[in-house]
Length: 434
Image (cartoon, rainbow, N blue to C red; front, side, top):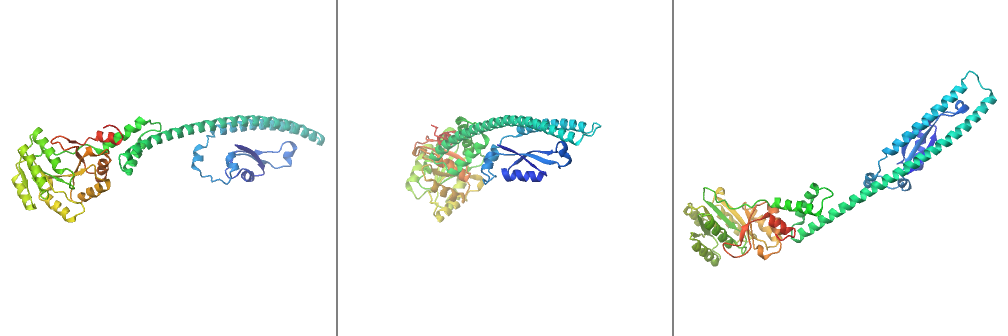
């Protein structure tokens, strides 16, 4: 820091001198009126003395932009410096008042001095003034030296604290980068990764360790996946459950697994309907399952057949409807699916969109959005045993907002199926063993 004094006839002129030498960022630390001493007081007007200071870096780099936010944040606390300067000024003012009182007593003691005595007295006063001035100068220099030491220590402490903060922030950022890479490796969309990490960063403190950050991300993923939405078996009315989706994703096998489980473990009255007449093997496969379970199967070829089946199966708890695989790019086939769904009122039907976890994400997006234009649905993901990543399950759930329900991982009926496990998915996404 650079500290200077400037004397002028007015405060404005002294301030101008300070800013000309130290720059516009000079700070006026103290303003004091200086009255002439001795006989000089009768011939000279009082002047103004100001003490100005400026950071040495600013003085040398006067042209540097002053709005640097980092510099503003690192400015030290000058409160102690200002207190010390005020204390110094108070001491000097007291000394000045004492000296002037002595001078006034000598001048008006009842005897006017002769010219020679006046000059002699003036010389004596000047000598004393010079001595006091020298003592005051030494005292001020000592105080300023102490203040400079104090300021340097404070700057060093601030610098150390900032370095510690930066180091901790760098460490936290390294943890976030590690988790981000793991989520991206598991094919979670970057936008969803950023959303999760931003939410966690706002809730955790600066000194959070890796375990705390991991736990926060894990909990956030579990909450976003939510509870599985399973088939309601407590409904008093017959529920018609439609399974829709692309060809080859495992709709028929999934129906057989769910129907078997509910029939054997819950004693649910189940019936089967298939409109997948494009594949003879599909009808035969479902007929085999129906015979094993001892439940009825009806094959429908049109919406009229479906309406008739609805009437005939109204005494069952659940009717599972297997639809033919349809291309999401074929408008006519999409309309066929919509007409089939409309044979049952919304209160009595439930739709499950069956998707394969092995399908490319871009294709999953198109399929999911196309079916969203037709109806509301719940998501089922198949073939988890054929992929090492489960990011697409999370992605499509986040994209559509549709609830997750079941997942399958093989061909065994009624095994290899279960409800979605949010904790398992979260562990898988973070590189755990599930």
